[in-house]
Image (cartoon, one colour):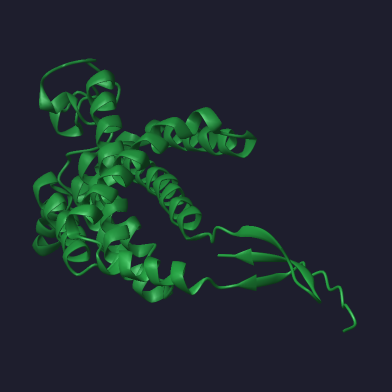
Length: 276
């Protein structure tokens, strides 16, 4: 028999035994195991959000500078914008005020986020689980930053009448915890995280519209300055995007096929076979 030598450099064979083991392991995946995995993802997402600034590049620092500049400009006109929004309070729909309060309050925020995650966990729905993990990890990250800023800056709320330049750092009084807006952070964290799961621009617009109700309602009732609210929303977007990139990167690395290369030779052939 004439020997034929053929070098197979791009041949991939599926190992049926290994594939069946993967399928069986997925079927046996328990709710408890998923919960432990998501707990690690939440911790990893928070860690990534805090460590991200140490890895920033030039564009990231330019973005940071733009945010700082924008916040400063809003600060300059805080009293003028405050008068405008407070004057709209009387004609503002009461229903929107109530939605703004409840959607941005911590207890209702965590009811919504845990509801989304809980459904994804019990139904083993990856998209709901991802959204829930994204909201919760982002909320933990922004919540810690918010607490530091509120106490460290100690800015007086506009309702006190002290003016936009009144500060009492590390004050225990709630009326010196204006900067940034907690309601704006929580409501926009949830809205941005949920909106990222849709491609339809109209659905996205509706979700962002709901997310804007809480920040605007806080301006109507004289609870925050405009710079407090806008910075809170921007902070939410930055943290959610950072955590989302981390979670998607983790999913991608987990799904990448692991290929094992083996050299095989026979009577009439020789080749390199990749098994995955």
